[in-house]
Image (cartoon, rainbow, N blue to C red):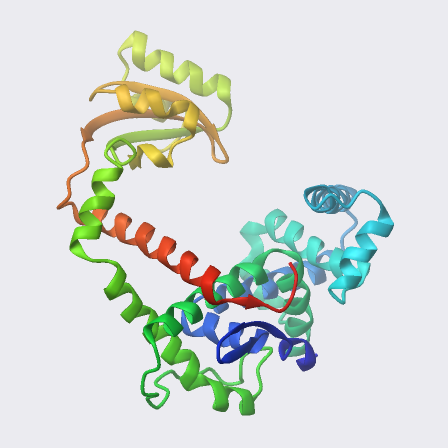
Length: 341
């Protein structure tokens, strides 16, 4: 199993990086703990369902597996097996990953109790991590984030390696071994520190001002009250009651036994079809329903604010955009991928 985690993923001169380096980076930047927690929850759900007979769960797994194949244009079973074979996976391992994802969603409210009742072993976590890193898109996400950091640190240039400051948990993280950690911890910490230096050189005050000015329409902010209704007809009726009958959004929410939530909405975070409504809105307007994952949401506009170069929230937003672009550029310049996704 450790052979998989030692497999080279990419190179940024003069270093070659493996899955173990990605895991170490993910741990040091707070990304790995949620991954392991998700794996543990999925494994617990699988053990929980062994005593259940629920055809609807199997149907949900089949549907998720079909969606996986559709997204990757794997039309036939032979194409699916070939795709898995290129990654060293079997159909059973892949379906296990799909099943864990489906069951975590289905038993979301029970996850804390299930994780406590069905503890996963380190070996089980490593087996599941290997599959999930290759099948769920999670591995690519983590690897690309680390590759961007490594490229940025390379652009900053070599720095003196300080003694590692991080404290790793005991027992050691799944996928790692003591010798590798001892050899690479200082390097990974140096890369993380290098990105901070990279940020300082690329995110200047002038650059922040230009970025905010560039997004004068996109970053209009509306402070709203919102209510998410479970279905569209109910949301439409609620919006009509507010607009035509003069009821407050609080009264409408109370009648439906729902909660009013305060929301700060930036125009560029809104579905494209709704952006003109938010841009033209004035305080007091009712917008929606907007259909999304949480249901159909009705918004009551309280205030509207144009972007200001001195707004701390917008400067942070601009800094994130600038850093993401700079990291992407540096990654394209310096990263040589040794595997295909």
